[in-house]
Length: 273
Length: 241
Image 1 (tube, rainbow over the protein chains, first blue to last red):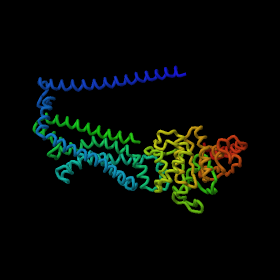
Image 2: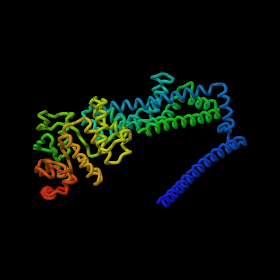
Image 3: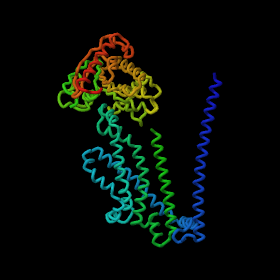
Image 4: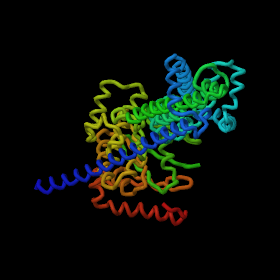
C-alpha cells in the first residue's frame, strides 16, 4: 500500500525541487546581469572621463565623485545636508498621509461637504502644486516650514482623494452588519471603514515617499541654505557638476532605502490580516 | 414605493418564510423589521413596541457571511456584544459554546479566509446569536452556498432556532427551502410588493428537519401549489423570476 504512494510522493518532491532550483537559477542570472550592467556602465563612464571622450567639467566621472563625497563626508558637511533633507522628507510624507487621511475622514463624515468641495479638489488635484512654492515662501518665510508646506501641497490632495475613495468603496453590507447591531456612525467608522482602508492608507504612504522627495528637492531649490537640493543648486551655480551628480546619487540611495522601508512596513501590516 | 399593504403577523416562536420573484420587496420588509429605515406609512411593532431603529431583540443574517477579514473568528463573533458594550467572561463562554455547537471548535483564532463558505456562514450565525436576539431575520442566508452545504446548514439553522425557541423570518427565492424550513409560507408579488397568498405548512412537514421534510407526503403538493402561484404571476405581469 505504502510503496506506490511513497514513490509518487517522492516524484512530486523531485519535480517540485527541480522547479525551485530552476527558479533560483533564474533569479541568480537576473542578479548577475544587473551587476554586470552597473559595472560596465561605471567602467565605461570612468574611462570616458579619464580619456576625455566626454566633457569632464559637465559629466565628471565616478572616482572623482567618490573622492568629492569622501571629502565632504570627512569634513562633516555632507551628513548635515543629508540629515536636513531626510527630516524634511519624513515629516513631509508622514504628515501628508496623516492630514490627507484626516481630511478624508471629515469629508466622509459630512457627505454635504464632499459635494461642496468636489470641484475645488478637482482643480487642486490638476494643478501642479510646486507652482505654489513661491507663495509658500512669501507666506511662511524662507526656511524649513516652506519646504514642508510645498511637500504637503503635493501629498495631501492625492492622499485625500485616494483614501476617501477607499472609504466609499467599502462594501455597504459590512456597514449593514454594524447597523443591525444598533451601531452608529462612529462605530461604522471605527469598526469597518477605517480597518477596511488601512491597506490603502499604507500604500498611499508609499506613493507619498516619492512625492515628498519631489516636494523637498523643489522646495530646497527655491529657498534653502542646507540640504541635498541646496547642494545641487549650489553645484550648478558654481559649475561643480561633480557635486551635482554626487548629490543626485545620494538622493537616489536615500529615496530607495526609504521606499523599501515603507514597503517593508506595508508587508508587515498586510500580512497581519 | 417598494412595498404596500403588507399586513403580516408573526407569532412568537414561529418560523415564517417570505418568497416571491425579484423586486417584490422581500429584503425591504426585513430592513423595516430590523429598523434600518422607517416605513413611510404604517408601523412595525415587536411585542407591541413600535420599531424605528435597530433593537437588540432582532438579529439579522445577510446573504453572505460578511465576516470582517481583519478580525479573527472569535473577534467577528463578539462584534455585536462589543457594540452593545457587553463583552464579559460569561458572554465569552457563551460564544465559545455556540462555536462548539456549530462544529467550529478550534477556529476561534483563525481568520475568515481560512474557512470554507459553509463554515463562514455558520460563524455569521454565531455572530447573530451571540447577542441573544428573540427574532431572527434570515435574508437568503443559504443562497451563496453550494447545494450540499446549503442542505446541511438548513438543518443546522432550523434545529438551532427551534431549540432556542427563536422567532424567525426567512427570505428566499427557493420554494422547497421555504416549505422545508417554515411553519408558514408567505408568497409576495412584485411591483409594488404585496402579499399574494399565505400558506400554513402541515404539521408533519413542520416537525421534521428540512432534509427529511422534503421526502414527506404532501411536500410536493405544496411545492406545486406554490410553483403555480409563481407561474401565474409571471404570466400576468410578464416577470422573469
